[in-house]
Amino acid sequence: MTVLYWLRNDLRLHDNEALTALPADTTALLPVYCFDPVALGPDAYLGLPRTGPHRLAFLLETLADLQQRYAALGSGIHFAVGRPEEVLPTLARQLGAQAIHASTEHTTEEEEAEEALTGALGPQIPLRRFETLTLLHPADLPIPLSRLPFSFSKFRFDVFSKMTVRPPLPAPQQLPPLPVGFAPAPLPTAAELAAQLGQPAQSRPTPDRRSALPALGGGETAGLARLHDYAVERHLIGRYDDTRNQMLGEAFSTKFSPWLANGSLSARQIWAAIDGYDATHGARSKGAMQLRLELLWRDYFRLLAQRAGPDFFRWRGLRDQRPKPTRPDRAVFEDWAAGRTGNAFVDANMRELEATGFMSNRGRQNVASYLIHDLHQDWRWGAAWFEHQLIDYDAASNWGNWKYIAGTGTDVRDTAFDVAQQARRYDPQGRYTRTWSK
Ligand SMILES: Cc1cc2nc3c(=O)[nH]c(=O)nc-3n(C[C@H](O)[C@H](O)[C@H](O)COP(=O)(O)OP(=O)(O)OC[C@H]3O[C@@H](n4cnc5c(N)ncnc54)[C@H](O)[C@@H]3O)c2cc1C
Image 1 (cartoon, protein in one colour):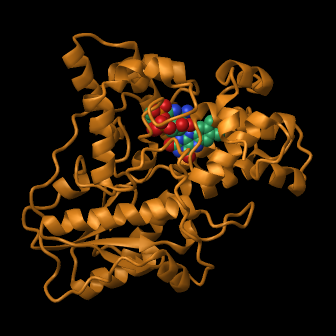
Image 2 (spheres, rainbow, N blue to C red):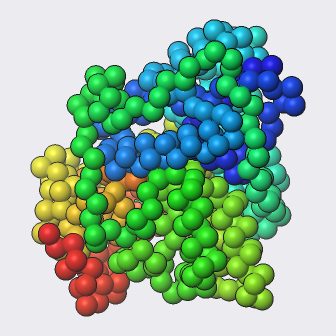
C-alpha cells in the first residue's frame, strides 16, 4: 500500500511512532511538508508574519537536514506550498494512497487543521494520528482530560506520579521508497517561498556572537548533538539547577527548546538522557530533577491548551478572571518591542530577542510582566510579538506562559514581577544588560 506522511512538528526519525507504525505492507511512502500560508502569514494582532526570520531560517535548516536523513534511508521529502487540507487530498488521490500518517497536535488551530483534512479526505482515506510531541503519552493519563487539575502542583503530585514516561522509539533503519515515478518538489529557499506565498522576503538574520544559542543550526542531527554534548560530554545536567536562571552564554540552560518546538528532538529522548545521567552518576541529582520538572511544564501547557480549546488564547482567564485594565497604545508597545522602554534590563532582553530569536526564561518572564503590569498593554500583543520572533515558538508554551503572567491562566494570584528587583538579583553586576546595551 501507498502511505502519505504529513510532516508537522515532528521533524525527526528518532522516537517517531508515525514512522514506526507504518503498516508492514507499505510499498511506497511519500513524506510531504506543507508550507502553510496561515502559519507563515500575518497574525491577527500585529499583522506581522507569524513565522519571523529566525524561526524560518531554523525551519529551513531543519528540513534540509531531514531531507538528507530521509535520503540516507532510501526515501525523500516532497515540499508543497498550501493548506494541508488542499494539498494532501489531491496528492493522496493522485497516488492512490490508502492512508495518511501524521502527528497529532493539541492546540485549537492545529486541531482544526486535522479536522479540515479529515473532512477533505472523506471516508476512503483515513488520517492516522500519532502522539509524538509530548513526554507523557496522552493515552496513559489516569484521568479524563476534562479533569486535568488547574494547578501544576496538583497535576504533578496527583496525576504525573501515577504515570511513567515511555522509552523513546528507535529510529527506523530503512524507509519505504517514494511512489514509483513521483518526482518530489525540492526544498524552496526563503526567497522562493516568499514569492510563492506572495509575501515580502524576510532577510536571513546575521549570526550574533553574543547569542546564547549553540551555533549548531536546525535539524535532528544538530538537536541530537546538543543533547549528547549537554548531557553526556559535559555533564551539564548536574549543574542545571544552579545555572538555569542565568542569562548569558550557551551553557546556563539546555537550549533544547528550538529543536523541541519543531520536533527535531523528542522530549522522551531527553528524558532517557536524564535517566542515563542519573544512572552514571549513581544518584538523582537536583539538576536532573529540575530539568524533568521543566519538561513536565511543557506537557502541562499542552494538556491545558487541549483541555481549554479556544479559551486558552482568549483575553479573559481560564477561571474567567478579567485581566487588569489596559491602556492600549501602539507607540508604547512598539517601544517595548524595539527595546526602547528606558528600562535597561527590559531593553537588553528585547534586543537579544530581536538579534537572535532567543531570550532566557528569566528574561521572558520579566519583559512579559513589564509589558502587562508596568506598561498596561494587552498581553496578546506581547504573545503575538514572541510568536513572530522566537526561534523556539510553541503555541502552548508561549500563550500559556503569557496567560500565566497576565494573571489569566490557572492561577488567581498576582503574577506581576518586580523587574528592578529581578535585575538586581539576576544581573547584579549588569553584565547581561551591558552585553545587550546596543
Ligand atoms: C512569556 C513566555 C513565553 C514563552 N514562550 C515559549 C515558547 O514559545 N516556546 C518554548 O519552548 N518555551 C517558551 N517559554 C518557556 C521557556 O522560557 C523556554 O522554554 C526556555 O527559556 C527555553 O530555553 P531552554 O531550552 O534552554 O530551557 P531549559 O531551562 O533548559 O528547560 C528545558 C526545557 O523545558 C521546557 N521548559 C522550560 N521552562 C518552561 C516553561 N516555563 N514553560 C514551558 N516549557 C518550559 C522547554 O521545553 C525547555 O526547552 C516561554 C516563557 C515565557 C515566560
